[in-house]
Length: 314
Image 1 (cartoon, rainbow, N blue to C red):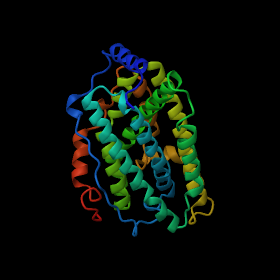
Image 2 (spheres, helix red, strand yellow):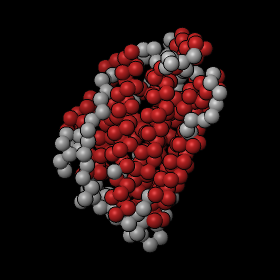
Image 3 (cartoon, rainbow, N blue to C red):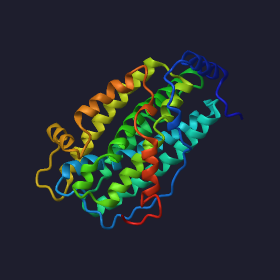
């Protein structure tokens, strides 16, 4: 049986490609060949509060370990379904490279969870909820072949593009977050975050380019951004609260917006202003991900990352 999409879906994709022929052009110099890297991180010496004296910033960033394994496996699952719709060979190669990198990200963050459990913070109750969200709520639905099934696939492709805007934002932030170094952040955790962040910057345009190639509807882009943003805010604040309330070293651990704002001002988390500014950036008709971040900076970090180059501790 052929894996090609139905003729109606192919015609739909071509119509959108024509409609968006004048969409913002990518910065050509920011494109790079994507590959999955075999990484290795040793967690035996990493403390629970890997950012010394700051459990809130530690746990706010730790939410990545809760969300990313399930979320990035979901990315891979959706993208394998959309591969037959791709009619541009370079984009197909980019998507295949993206799939490989995202699968490795899921595995690397998954490996942190047993270490957290050994330190007395069992993440299972929260990760079970995240698994349900991606596998059930956002998973494949029993839909008839044709328009309904295609609609749901395009919705998820657009949602991934919106999420990838924020993963690239976070990746660019952590590559430049010098305050984490000044505060004595655990070098292995920092290497994991920066390796992952560098790859997010490296492949930051793939999800958006794929969405524009197979659909490109601005209405869908704005709608799915709203859904993705609301879901990320909801999940992140629940995750930070979960970690703070279950931290065995804290008597009365709490997470608040005030703490988030102050941590952003101090440079140990992205600033509130930068996060708010990222909203109109993505929604601008002239937006393209290659306009933000630096592939050269990402490549330089990936060339020096201990975890991505033999796994030696920094």
